[in-house]
Length: 272
Ligand SMILES: C[S@@+](CC[C@H](N)C(=O)[O-])C[C@H]1O[C@@H](n2cnc3c(N)ncnc32)[C@H](O)[C@@H]1O
Image (cartoon, rainbow, N blue to C red):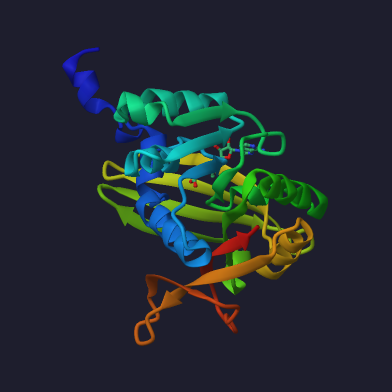
């Protein structure tokens, strides 16, 4: 390649979409802090072992094993390619002892069998790929079985009237723009088609870098299914909003109060 053709390369052709995803979508430090704080509150002890379902690049697991010499992680994803990416990019950031405490499993979360762990996390709504109640019940039942007797399952969820709208949301992240598109919504089946696109300062784009088809589940129904799966208590932690500006805060409040909310994001915490 000549210098002039290299110069002409579009930014979109030079970037790694998994790095962009990690930077724009994930905040694993915050999430692991949230999990540790809730676990301590609920169980009065420290959590050490985790299973990261739908792990993608296994970023949360990689952080978890770095945070304490006793921490261990099992990271599960069905896609061999994304796990290869994790092996080539995130795992090399760990030292040998940390790497020895993380197990990457290529498989379906509906089949996985693991030694019981303190907590399981399934974030970024990945579990919404299960479209019917019986499959969701099967998944939650398997999570229940994969937890220690005092284990806790952490999920996330969103809702509010805007969740059902066809819309695009743009956000500047460093030197690129993250675009979340809710492209289609079926108001009978509650199936939604979403995409993540990235745009760069030279105008180039990665369109449909990630594509998701899932069912929008109501938090109340998820709670009922979790209770059917054997969980004893299920709490929704909804993101708090600044009372004056209405801007979302990095704070989550327990409770079901969300009357007339146009949109909310939150966590569902299910205690075994
Ligand atoms: C939205 S990404 C989630 C990445 C990361 N966990 C996060 O929080 O951002 C969804 C991942 O789930 C994986 N996946 C989809 N269905 C799965 C299944 N049944 N079992 C395991 N992994 C699955 C996909 O391969 C993809 O890597």
